[in-house]
Image (cartoon, rainbow, N blue to C red):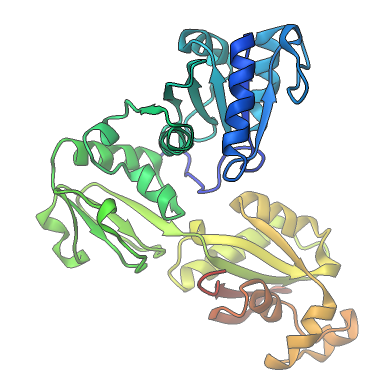
Length: 362
């Protein structure tokens, strides 16, 4: 099985970079930045020979410049020949799971090419967005786009869903492209629009899956079983409130999380973040558990917990030890923005855990 795909990929923020190495290209980059200033923040780069005000030139060498810029941005627009771009970025490419969106534009601003990371990196959508702003022609070559079919990774990105198995996602996309019937099973009840579907991608119930060649199932459940090819997508909106004794081993916390998520029949891929009290912010076991599950860690102050602790059962021992009467439940409640409690305080070997679904819209 391939590495699972988190929704939030890439580097930095929504800031774009434009890289160019000609006088005309520099002028065009300045014009593009001005035209996009309302919708897209942009940093401009060139080599020293073409430095002007407002355009950074950290080196005289294009290869060195690109190696500096490439890891720092989610989106890079090159104003130069596509052949040069291909040769320059080739040693830097890792995989479509982590590479930035790469766009290429001619220095007249007539064409915007989606070159790399068209789906997961969003290069296709970004090429169309930029082309619309500056009055250019977007050029897309991905099969799903030119054939008006939805790719699984595009669908997932559009709805901020986690892809649990990228190989399965490619296989299901291939079925869609090859006109095979694929069902879309929407257990999570996300909003589906017409653009999400095509003639052979059909919303249906799970009990009818045998009528199809493959399936996309949007669900956080951990116990899905099908005997046709399928890919599981899921919202990442599960919050875990955690408390533990000092120096609890990471393996014990990790095992407790797996057991607890299995108890509520939820996939661990649906976890968005772990929340704990401020006195545990340097607890190695919790930090390593956060890294193991590749999720966020939110530290909740005792002052905030004190405002909500009366909603939950108070432990005199915890109150005496850290000044508030409970940890896992109020931390989960606060970090889920008052979401739905799926499992109240569960205790095991000095650890406590509660499971929450983040409030919709947060």
